Length: 111
Length: 120
Image (tube, rainbow over the protein chains, first blue to last red):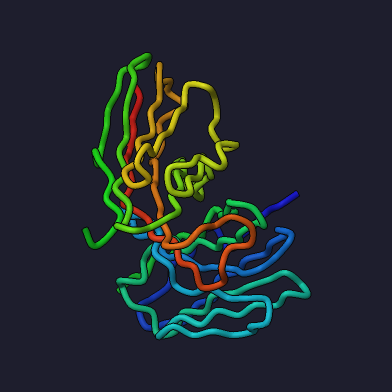
């Protein structure tokens, strides 16, 4: 069964601290994994797309890792800012016209 | 426009009422998706269009849901005889290229802000 699971469900951190969000997937066949940021009341916005051969990819303060053997990905946020407060969603496309979305991690950054 | 536009932003409907949700994708985008997002959940696939062709409607929860994209640009999601369980945010997304088969690895999806539907 194709699934994408994320942890933790929610996270509260102090401004300036780092955090790591986890994603485990069982989607097959696998071609790429995407991380999206969704602000409250907005649609998801792409942060990064990682292919099978990529282990690490950075986008500013966001660094995503991928272990295709264990089917795990992480999103590391460095020096968090208040504007990082959002839901972070892990997404894995199937071989068809579909994407499997995780339920997301709700991150709250407090001053 | 610069992004994917959805309207209305909010819709309140009485149970049994029909509603129509509109999506204006980015100009020239071939692929268009509709997703349903319940509170606190990730988006769930409803249907996919490649230009005007509806290639996949496997995610539509019942025959009360109907989507169209007659000219390959604007799309409308129609829900007939709305029920309380239809209350959710309906997201539209588009991408430049086709998603048929394996998606291109650098193919981004651009999402609208969604329509929040509340059925009373």
